[in-house]
Length: 204
Image 1 (cartoon, rainbow, N blue to C red):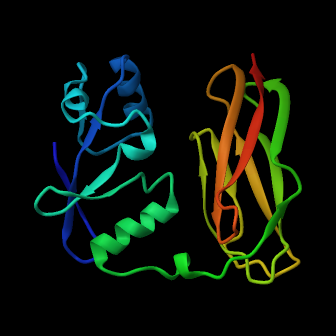
Image 2 (tube, rainbow, N blue to C red):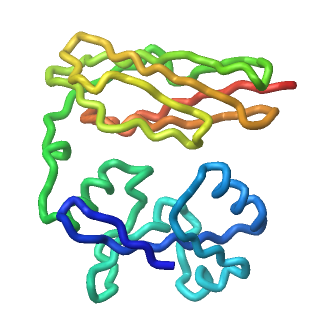
Image 3 (cartoon, one colour):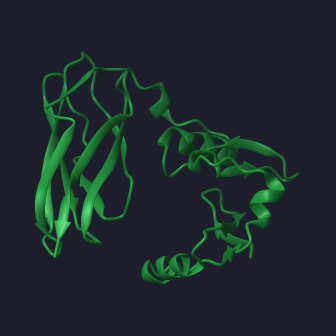
């Protein structure tokens, strides 16, 4: 089940997806729904996890191995752009300038976006405003959402001191009921990642 993909260095990087969940049908449904094309090992009994004693924290369930199968980095590069930089440094031997960016300060118009109660088939939109209150340019590296039903759009251009960046948020419910989703904004602010909440209740 090891898959090899082209890397930025011109070679290939092997990787494997190993999934364990009490409901195998739910895992299979998600794989089909997202049209996931790579091989996946579904460990129905949890044997792989028990053998390796993986952390229950999803942040530490991804790791990078060297050619001798020794762990050289731990962390989820999807959830944390700084870990992504670390992986690129290990794979390519370079360090991106993001981590060297000069720090600034950011203020938010709000930290929560409440959509209230709305029909499930209605797409909800809202926004957060991030103002650069520091002395250096504000650089937003990435915005990570806690699920695929929440999407964020924003300008990739640097934000000058005193100017504001609009972060547009779209929520499309996949099921009825109350929801409380998290967005993490990774930037060159002292308090990065900024933690934002989107909540509400979808009904029939």
